[in-house]
Amino acid sequence: MKINPHNILQHELIGLRTEVEDSTNREVEGLFGTVVDETRNMLVIENASGKDKKIPKAGTTFVFELPEVRVRLRGDMLVSRPEDRIKK
Amino acid sequence: MKKRRRKGRIEDIALQRIERLFELAEADARENKIKGRSRRGDRYVQLARKIGMRYRVQIPHQLKIRICKGCYAFLVPGENARIRLRGDYITTTCLRCGKQMRRPYKGLGE
Image (cartoon, rainbow over all chains, first blue to last red; front, top):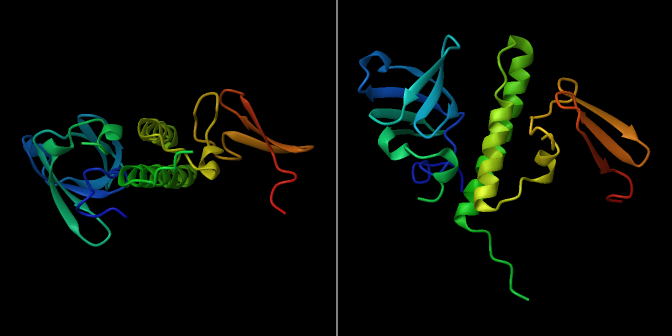
């Protein structure tokens, strides 16, 4: 089973293109780029100019681009270590 | 003997994630050669290993030989790894920590 909207919570987020749609920090709203690293509380997004932006998961809404669809996710649901997320 | 458990959904996703991380490490290494940015491969190996250990999924052999057994670096031949044939086995030397990994290549397959 490949990555799809049903298993995205368990799947690898690194490598996906994403957009910050809504955040408690107004500065980063609209940020678009590729996820390059993930920790328990942060996603590191590389933007178009090649800069790494560390975005807290909590309080942020992300729109992930999957091969066919776009998925809007509340970052609060992603707060956990990347290797712990498969089993929830 | 107990029947081997069928690979479940969780193991399936874990394996996919491991393979994906190695793909990304490979892509990053290739891109890095041109742009000269900091490498992320080692971090992706670290994540892949963690996923493998947590869900008891083995890292496929073809991918495992890209990891240094001493310092867990993502090995890119010509970049941070030296690969030599020595008699009956292949030696891979990690150029970061100096660890030598040996594996046979004769008498396999046909």
